[in-house]
Amino acid sequence: MKFLFSSRSEAAYLLAAKLVLYKEQHPIILAIPRGAVPMARIIAEALDAELDVILVHKIGAPFQPEFAIGAVGERSEVYLNPEVGAMDIPQGYLEEEAKRQRELLKKRRQMYTPTSGPKDLRDRTVIIVDDGIATGSTMIAAIREVRTHDPRQVIVAAAVAPPPTAVRLSKEADRVILLDEPAGFYAVGQFFQNFEQVTDRDIVELLVKTQRDDKARR
Image 1 (tube, helix red, strand yellow):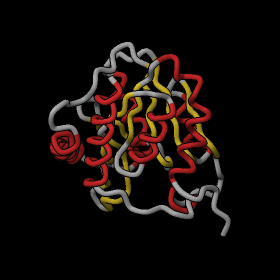
Image 2 (image 1 turned 180 degrees about the vertical axis):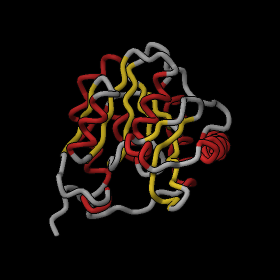
Image 3 (image 1 turned 45 degrees about the vertical axis):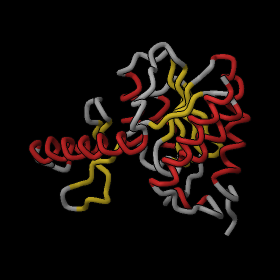
Image 4 (image 1 turned 120 degrees about the vertical axis):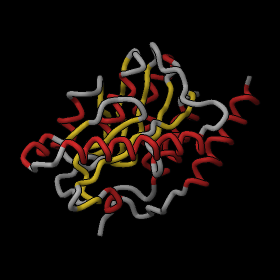
C-alpha cells in the first residue's frame, strides 16, 4: 500500500510551508486533540505563532455511538450533520448528549490548560489544524466555536479530507488548506505510514513545553 505521508510530522512540515504566508499576521494555531496537537506545534514553531487547543467533541448516534451525527464545542451551538433530519433522533437525546459532552470538554480544558484557559481569539487570524478530516462535523463545530470569539479570519489546515468534505468546509471557513483530497477515503489513518496514538499526557507535555519555550523567547 502506498501512503501519502510517512508520519504526522511530515504532513505538518508540508502544511507549514503552505501556511507561511500568514506568519506576518501573528496567527494563533489551534489544534483539535488529540492527533493534531503534535502537528500544530510544528506549524506554530514554523510560523512563530501561539499554540492552543480547540475543544470539540462528536455527538454519536443513539443506536451507534461511534457514528457521528454532529459535534459540539465548549460554548457554541450543536452542529448536526445535514442527514440527521431523516434519522428521527429525539430532541431530548441531542440535548442530553450535548450537555454530557460539554461537561467532558470542561474537564479536558482543565487538564490541558489548567492555569491559562482558552486564549483570546478576538480580531486574530486563527488557523485550526487537524491531521485529517472525514465527515467534517467536528471541524465545522470547531469553526463555529472559534466564530463565537470574533476572530479576524478562520483558516482550516489538514493533511487530507475527501472532496465533499472539502466543499462543506469551504462554506464555513475563510480558507481551507489541504495537502490532498483523496476520493477513496475510509479513515484518516490509511494515509499515514506511521499513525501512532497521541495520549492526553502527550498533549499536556507538549502544551507545557510550548508555554515554557514562549516564556524563554520573551
